[in-house]
Length: 306
Ligand SMILES: [Mn+2]
Image (cartoon, rainbow, N blue to C red):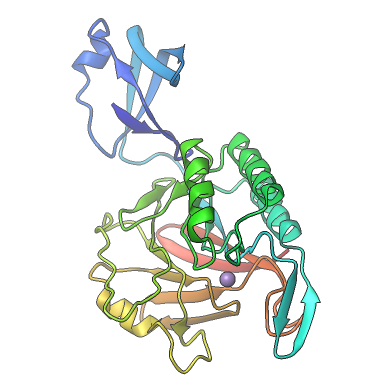
């Protein structure tokens, strides 16, 4: 069986026919079970848990006892960028510091997940420094060791080099690529991600319907009206709300390097700024992350400075 643990880690469990409990259990998708008497086998392909004759199965139902889940959203870390220029002035930036601080906050707050909204690596086109890859791997490893899953989408900056690195991180269980099929955070929040689209003109995100009683969050990496001053934005919060045919409670974008929010009916939306000083002047955008919590089906978003 393919299962997911309470920290969102997915893995295989093998139930042998020698297990009476395992064989007779009416396994249901979307339900939680507490397993005891599991044996872990170390195989060259990894560690595989087995349920043999001593397996105990305790059916917990569809919910597990949590009042709140929390995730930390960060975006536009631009690891590898050293100088930022805007409107004729330029200043030095230290993306690794902001990204490290964000991961530290996630571990300190013991959140249920971290979501990165794109442009984790800067990669102006000439590849990615091995030092930046090591920094990133080190932080993602610390996060994994704290039992916190890291979800991400691609921004416009990762390019092929960034994608290869992120795919390797995903293969090493250090990161999970978000897509149009939702990922559940602690059974209480469905999260979708759409990678940066260079041409959004006729693009309609085709996202899977999440369970009715769970709020949902969609991450994109586009210039969205009203979060950009661009006269030619990729899309608008209003259009996206109408185009996506499943209800979304929270729409989040990176890319625009501003921190602003809006609300249309029940839809909350915000642009998540950056974890580095990448605004229109050195001090116009201070590095930040967002703490998103769900309690009793209601979403709460709080900006936290780094
Ligand atoms: Mn960016």
